[in-house]
Image (tube, each protein chain N blue to C red):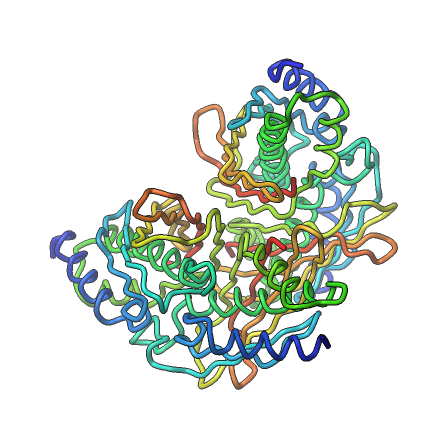
Amino acid sequence: MEKQFIFEQITEMWNNHIPFNSLLGFTITQMTEEYAEIQFDWQDKLMGNPIQKILHGGVTASVLDMVGGVVISANLIGRINKPDKKKIADKLSKFCTIDLRTDYLRPGKGKSFVATARIIRHGSKVAVARMELHNEKGEHIAFGTGTYMV
Amino acid sequence: MEKQFIFEQITEMWNNHIPFNSLLGFTITQMTEEYAEIQFDWQDKLMGNPIQKILHGGVTASVLDMVGGVVISANLIGRINKPDKKKIADKLSKFCTIDLRTDYLRPGKGKSFVATARIIRHGSKVAVARMELHNEKGEHIAFGTGTYMV
Amino acid sequence: MEKQFIFEQITEMWNNHIPFNSLLGFTITQMTEEYAEIQFDWQDKLMGNPIQKILHGGVTASVLDMVGGVVISANLIGRINKPDKKKIADKLSKFCTIDLRTDYLRPGKGKSFVATARIIRHGSKVAVARMELHNEKGEHIAFGTGTYMV
Amino acid sequence: MEKQFIFEQITEMWNNHIPFNSLLGFTITQMTEEYAEIQFDWQDKLMGNPIQKILHGGVTASVLDMVGGVVISANLIGRINKPDKKKIADKLSKFCTIDLRTDYLRPGKGKSFVATARIIRHGSKVAVARMELHNEKGEHIAFGTGTYMV
């Protein structure tokens, strides 16, 4: 299988069949071996503070965790020799987040948001990604660092 | 106002009027100046991994952020001299999470979950809480550390 | 070899042959599979702030990283079947810190200090320890969480 | 006083009168309101692992904590209206690290090292910096994030 085709299939699956992502409205819009992107729109149900009308801190942590996981999964898959369904499923079955740090820089205000991730450590056991969250005005809302078992 | 009465009112408000907490089914069950507790039940929409049927890492981060915020809010309010609505609203208006670290120890499996928080640093500018997540069997699912602006 | 004997030998080696530990005066005083302890005395060279006469934040991070590494090493060795020098050296050769979080609770004042560590996650690839630093009065100076590759 | 002159004086003081920095051979080589840099050379006493001949993880954490503190101090001082010795001393007297996260990407091998820091959050109570450590070949050894009380 072509890598690009694999990433499209996984994107389609994760966008539609991970209940919590659907609940929050997360859509993976880029998935490559070094970079990933998730977009989502403001919805009142994502509100953590009704007075200030800002994102719940948990929404921010959730999207950062997710987008970091997307880029690291893509990287893992990209390194499989002659990938097929079984090899991919095997690889991803061990994948999990070990720890996640979220730094909240500004209140989560906006109409739409984009979370991005880049890999900073590739490894055979552990991988690390750095993530960012911006709103539609380009305001930087949060930073994240995620360590994942691979 | 009596502190206990204030905490009950805030608990009632946060349990019913923070949209994201309602969406996830979080219920504050204890709020004191040193300790707080949130309970929630498994719901399919909280699933991060349909194959393994476990909590999305973002749900874990969300409840740890929230329960840490509850104990620190209670502590802040407890230190107000003759608290009234205005003083409490003033105090809480500045409150926000600065950073949050989540350590995932085990897959988030279970029928119901309890998140707990204790204060480890009281300060006039910054407070720190340590949080834990367990399931109904007492299995320890995650640890967290949250730093909050107060 | 008996585990207790192995731990004594490693303690002796690490106390005397890791240059940076000697420089800072760190002494491992307990090494078991679930718990470790390091002691050190105040020395002016450890000062980070000459006006306040307190430990440099880097000293605190160093001792927490070290004591977490001690308990996790002990745990790794404890799980080796019929341990011998080669097996132990193999096991420890892959060992390294992935990430370390230090929470500074109080200024590092004191005449002597004790750092302690407990394991919170055992794993075949990754282990996590929680660490604390207290002074001789029992004042709690810092918390730490370390994630280690094993 | 001119800002540039102030930064030179502080650099001189911190390079020569913080015992732990002298012990480790840290030299501040840049201090501006948005960016700071510290250089240091390999010395055997900084070794954490005699077999691999690499930096102790505590050295890495120490220099990242320090360089983050330098850029944030410069930023604080830069925002003082008509700075004088008293105002600067007052401002810096409250300054301390709240928490520090270090991500170890590669073994700390090299002849000389440079740690850099940029501010990612300016605030009236709390500031956050992101730090990096590279060796003389440009290899990226570690990342850090520090949260400071200001």
